[in-house]
Length: 485
Ligand code: BES
Ligand code: MN
Ligand code: ZN
Image (tube, rainbow, N blue to C red; front, side, top):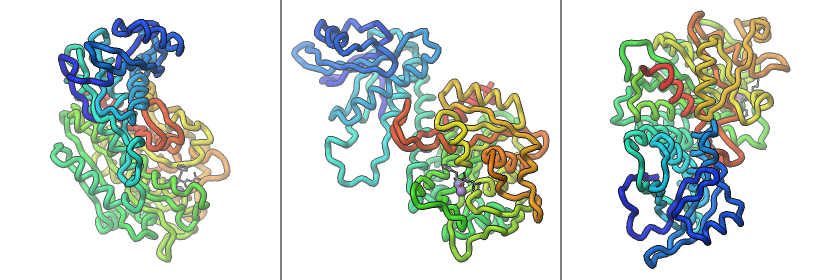
C-alpha cells in the first residue's frame, strides 16, 4: 500500500476520511452527516466507523469517520491503529483506489498519525496471488493513502512505520505460502531477494556443512523429506562493537508429524509451522529497513518433517551439535530438535549477549493461553520483563510460564542424555526445558511459544483471518528499547 503526504487534497478525491476522537465530530461534517452519525450511534469509539456523502463545490465525496476513542485512553496507540484498520477493512474493496486521510482539522501528533497509517496498511494486506477467478467486486481496490495536513516531521516518523509494516507483511507472506512453494531452500531464496541491497549479511548452511558441524538433531528431522534442510542467518551490524542480540526461529516448512504422523483434519495448518522463522525473518527486515542502531542476528532452522522410508523412527537416538544425545520417542516433537542445533550453533558462531527464540512449538500452549498471549519461558528476569513490556506496548503479548528443575527430570531418558517428549502434563514446559539444555549457563535466553499466535481463525486488531505477523513488532520494540541507545 502506497502512502504519500500532500499539502492539499488531490483533485477529484472521492473518499475522504477523518480520525475522530470520542465525542468530537469534525467541523467538515454537515447537518445530515451529524444526524446520521447520531442515528447510527457513532460516538468515535475506537474502531467504530460511519460514513455519509457531502457535496462540496459541486462535487460529491464520501466522508468517512473512524473512531479513535478517548484521547487519554492508555491504549491510545492501539486505538489509533484500530481506527486505521477499520478504514482499510471497510474500504479495501469499495472500488476506491485512493483514500484521503484529512488531518487539516486534527491535532494528532506525527507518532499518533503513524499508528493510524500502520493500522491502515497492516489491515489492508491480503495475499491473493493464487486467486485467478476473483470477481471484480471482491478484489482489493484500495492501493494508496494520501495524507493531507500531516503534522511536522511526519515523513521521517512514517519511514520507521513503513519499515515495520514491511517486516510484518513479509512474515505474513512467508507464513501464508503453502509448503509446495515455501520449503527450506525457497525460504532462503525469498529472504535473499528481500534483503538484497539492504546491507544485511546472509549466511546459509547446507546439509553437508551441517553434517560437518554435527547437527544430527536438526538433520534427523529433515531426513524423511526430499527437500534439503538449511540454516539461514541474517546478520545486521548497525551498532558498535557490542555482542549481538540473537533471534532464533523454528522453521518447519511443513510438519506432518513424521512417522508419528498427525491426524488428517487440520493438518494443512502445519504449513505455518515455520511461523517462528517467519517472525525472525520479518523482524530482521523491519530492523534492517529502518537501519536500527544495534547488532542483531536472526537464525532460522529450516526443515520439512515428512514420513518416508528414510524418515527417522521413534526410538532412534541422534547426536546434537552440542554433543548431547537425544532419544526420539515421538517424531512429531520435532521443533525442539531443530532448535537444539540452531540454538547451539547460534551461541558458538555469534556469541550473542542474549537469545530469544520463537517457535510454534506445542499445541499445549494453546490449551494454556489460547490466542491472546504467547508463552514466555526464560532463565532471566530482566529479559522476561523487557519482553513483557515490549509486547504490551505493541500488542504482541507474552505471558511468563515456569521453568524448573523438577520438570527437567521428565525428559531424562534411560538410553540417551534426554528424550524429546515429557509425560502427560506440562507439554509446553517440558519442551522449554528441553531447549534450555542447549543454552550455555549464564546466557540470558527466552523461548516464546507462538503456536496460538502465528495464525488466526478470525480477524483481529490489524489483521484479517490468516497469518498475523506476530513477533515482528515484539522483535522491533525489544531491540529499540534495549539494544539501541
Ligand atoms: N508444530 C506442532 C505444534 C503446533 C500444534 C503448532 C498446533 C501449532 C498448532 C509441534 O511440532 C507438535 O507437533 N507438537 C506436539 C508435541 C508432542 C508430540 C509432544 C504437540 O503439541 O502435540
Ligand atoms: Mn510436530
Ligand atoms: Zn511442529
